[in-house]
Image 1 (cartoon, rainbow, N blue to C red):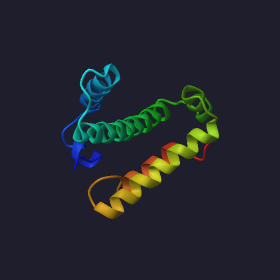
Image 2: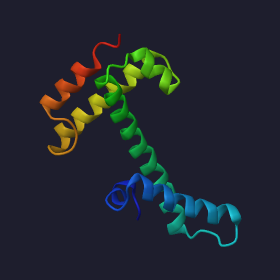
Image 3: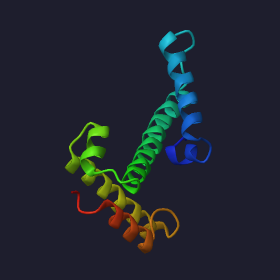
Image 4: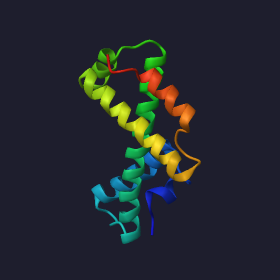
Length: 124
């Protein structure tokens, strides 16, 4: 079975999007239908793309904060309020910290979590 976790080891965001587009194009043109395995791979690739893009988005938020951007500016760039942008980033920090507590490898250790929270501030 193909899962996003398995595909993550094989694909960058760019290669995942390329493969996903190949499968979608074949399906849209209807020339050759997708097999069950290919259909499941397209689903898993879609999820992988969402995950990788979401992670990249939060890294960009951190970069903007490091460069001095306010939460109002970040929210505007994301098409949302400053509060929504800050809350989404805070959830991401929480998820990264939980991932490290669970795996001991991936995510943020205590020091990285503290640094991320300092950079995020209180949403103002």
